[in-house]
Length: 319
Image (cartoon, rainbow, N blue to C red):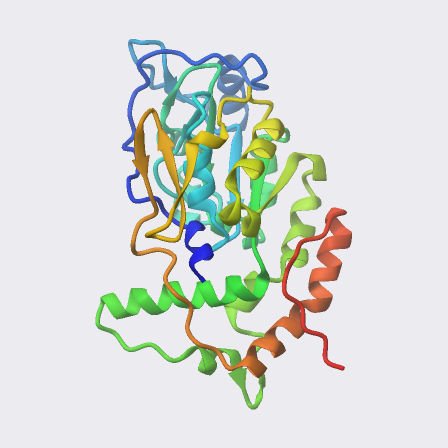
């Protein structure tokens, strides 16, 4: 299970800083002036205020959003992508499009959550809950029809176990009891398909909602299972999708034998995953795990057909 440790938060998270010098990205699709006009057009009031730093950087609407999936490796993806000098990443999950209290604050509030960046940099935010939230695709589309979206997915069955593990340890840290995973997965002797963690792994259902608003070539799917085993090739694909110059290289990643997963090396400084992430999954009865994998067999096939590619996910088909 050690390989699954990579889909998590890195130990050292960079604080939001004002960049000291501009990075050049000649392929950036959206300029600062276009962002300004976009904000004015999509705001109810044209009273938006730019936060501009004396060095010429400012807060911009994101041109790229990591939309999910929860427990798919979104934080690891964001930290790896942040190795690129033309990327400016929001520090925390913003939950603008899925939390009504935040959405009612409007785009001025949203832009205030973004890091300072230069016109040629791409601002990125990530909120894993976006992928499975029904209202979000339309809201993102209404803000920016040309948004570039990143979606990182992993084996649906493994994602369910990771989902449970996170909530279990959250309760444990608060000294609160939490039911066993079997109590969530089984109901009246059958697989409990109403369990939220299972629903989040029905990728084709949520993907259909996004494809109502965005063409497939605007959504890049990162293979989360490959990212944790060999991150560099997956990050190279992301660079190409975002039309970034190839700045991240294999030397930025090294396998930490003690921890059992890949860590990052940036300008001589090394950083690894946070110890609270990537915990071992609970032991699950083999028959129950096979039942879970069997349940995802048909939904996975539908997803493969929908996106025109396959993934090496565990599948059990009853004979």
